[in-house]
Image (tube, rainbow, N blue to C red; front, side, top):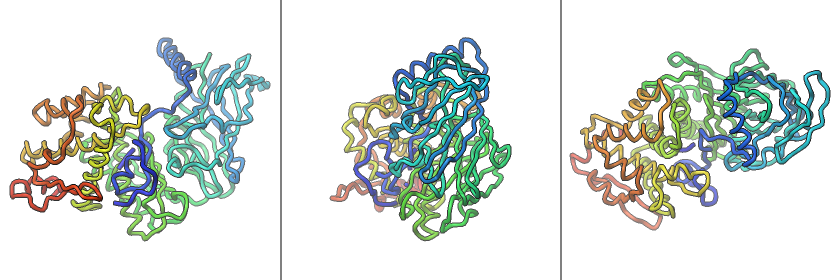
Length: 516
């Protein structure tokens, strides 16, 4: 998921690490809204099960889970799962984004029948198991101590002596054959003495939780969790801090609630679930320019460097959350079908940049500097003249194309300028999202068709979307920005944008763009 001013610290980044290239962040979030990746054989089995369930009208049921922290050094948990119906084959996810080999962490798997009898288990492949007779219960251990690249810390489960992040999406088994599906989970936790848990699921008591979205369920556990909650509209917004921070939990909550309020007002759409922001330290003694985040369902998981002043941490927290919190709306609250990553990534990054500007987290110069850095990245993409944004979204996980970020963000920027100029500042980029939520709130719609229709209606013409979204229109900022008084200058350190010499009419457009 992606968005905001600091020097990149790692190797040249592929599309998933887009935010580093903005120069305002150094480590980036995982794109949200994408499923866990399975092996080809498992995909077929899962699809068959889903189709069978749909045709037969199978009622989803609850899986009962007991998760016990066996040790924190090394990190290891044991899970007991009781299925609502018996099965003879199960599978565990083996990859999520760039994190591979997740299923290899599963060990000591045991199966039991309805009467508690032990049933021999045969391993078919990594993460795939079967038995000769049906079973309804399994127990297994999961190693969570392997060193991970720090940027994966918000995306997969891990555990150490200080804290842990448990994501049911990579811990929960899937029943594949002879079984009804389960779309809810009852979870009982057993933690070390002095540890507590925070979750985006429903809390029945301190260690018992219920979720009707197991794939999106998150637990932050540890000996030092501080939670603050505030009512915003009809829902609660909570912030959970793990460990010691140079900022107070009330300050973090203030930032989060302010952003939620702004997005609720902008979209005209109130969140349907209570929202939770989980904040844990980024590994190592690093500053807030290092971070990784992901939004799942109604939760934002953020690992942020905490070495620095309170002012530095607060500023970076606000900039990161401006992007991540918006994912609670787009795509998490939308009923849109199809691949539209160009919109919920690239357009969302641009909207978050505008929110940074609106909340005075960045200056207008920072705003233009960010656009310039994205433009340089776009110019370096080998696919920029070959793929439309729709095609880039469809191939996002099979190529190194960054167009769903680079080009889509630039297209959003140009669209915003076109809209403000055409309406003489009476319309803005915000109107796009307000119209979108009004249109799709009550029913599921085709994503690209719906969004393009709104783009065309707002702008009063079809040429822009046809060229830049559906087509492979090339972006040339030199010519595109000249009507707005923004100069484009090439330097040895990259492109520079400046509005210092805009005339009165041009300055009016730029002032409304800057929120003046």
